[in-house]
Image 1 (cartoon, helix red, strand yellow):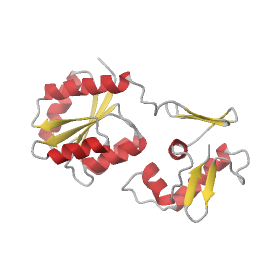
Image 2 (cartoon, protein in one colour; image 1 turned 90 degrees about the vertical axis):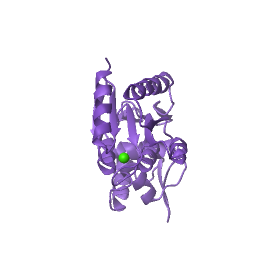
Image 3 (cartoon, protein in one colour; image 1 turned 30 degrees about the vertical axis):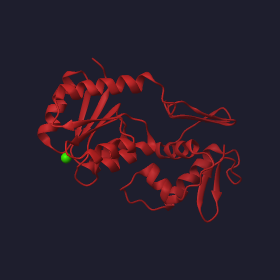
Image 4 (tube, helix red, strand yellow; image 1 turned 120 degrees about the horizontal axis):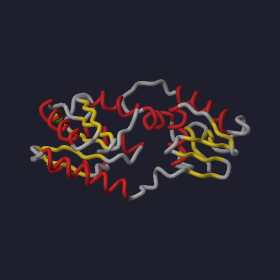
Length: 228
Ligand code: CA
């Protein structure tokens, strides 16, 4: 048995049900979501250990969900594709899916693929979960712990996500809408000034002198960047 969690995003109840049954029997904790938007909401709250993803979904399709996931994590993704659409399979893999299973599939085969993908991805450290260490700042995505000048900093989940995102792309300039999309997700409507507010709070928390930031810099007329 394992306590690994899997989210199955599939809008056909008969398929979702049988996948649920087999994965549960294989010892995984399984959540079924039948709608793309609901899937993004669920994934934004907590990432599972693996995602099984249908392509054709109501509201937000499997490609958009893959893109959204790959912007923020290396969580393994197995796509469920229809036999006819070879282009879909290629597109899915190019977007960063780890594997695909062609419908109709045997549930036992899907379980084997899940095991294989988890073995592969958990066996090799992907590198993205290792702490980012800068001279005065450390960001650990595993524990979500941030220290600045050896002091532990309390960040909200969004503040952490935004700092981590920017620090993973040092010196890259992001507009407010790019940061919104990367940190808050594709389809939620949020005022861009939210980014400004979060950035200001982050500066107050991690910068020794928030008025003269060393890490979180404003690029006038464009947006923000992280300076290591
Ligand atoms: Ca479907």
